[in-house]
Image (cartoon, rainbow, N blue to C red; front, side, top):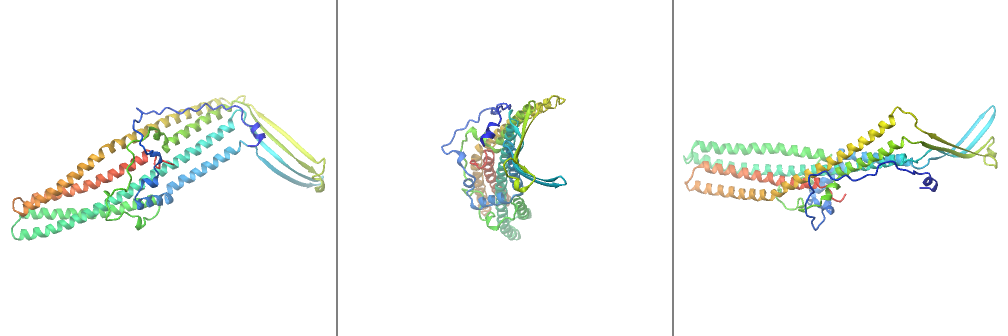
Length: 446
């Protein structure tokens, strides 16, 4: 800043001192800090599947909502630059020429137009409020980006799960059709009853219904994912049909513990904090309205009746015009504006508290679900193994004539249900990792 502008800068800042609110949460987040700081985990490292990672990057490049958020940030930055420019004097060059019956008049010079002396911090607080609004907008964009990343990854994993369900249904239908063909021959020989044959037929039709249903679901999943992407899903980025959600490394395991400070690093919490800082600066603006405003207008140049004499000695001219504005009576408008600014600050504090409380609840919910997922997966895998053994034993006993067909059909239903439930639970486990990624601040290292 030039020396003259520094001398003319504000002397008093009437904005209250900003104090970081104490997080309004029921209790501190008591978790151990791991050896590897989770704040250093990047998005590119979180998604280890190359197709999923590329799909997320495609969405970040093409999603229209995120593009609007980015443009809003650029607009807020431009508005901040406009407001911040008022802290420096505006100097302009002028030139004028006129001719009338009285003669010719020529002039040239530079001028300072209505530069406000920021004696009470009004201009600097307006600049600070614009800066904090810009930072809040940028934090909102990062929050939208994290949400988009989680939604895209969740949609991609849902598509993978439904492809696996569709493949399982097709395999089950093929197996049941083979069993039906065998049962039809047995029925023709009188080995099984018509009821058992009808039940075997119903299992085939049930699997056929699932195949058709999942075909529709897969297309709907693809459409939802492409809406988030803002473009068609390339074939090389789609989940492979031979893969399933049990593959390790699709989403890396997050650390078991996270420091409580990460709650305050969430973009939505930072957005609320910047909005609070902006409201504090607006109080300074409202207080400054009670005090005089002094503006300076000055110019210096040269004037002459002839072009040849425009820059000769003695043709110089100057002007200096300070102006003073002192509020005497405004019908209580300034007092009401100050009350409004203070209420905006109180509202911003409440919104900040709400953001912290929401962050605490979301993290606590995700961690509580995480605590039981390993046990649930182990139990479901054990149930699946038990169902497979049950079917094997039922089929062996049926072939030996020790049991009827109904036991085999029940075992087939149980196995199919256990396989479907395991797919659901694997998707839930991956979704929980995504939830932790989102509620703990996303890319960790913005």
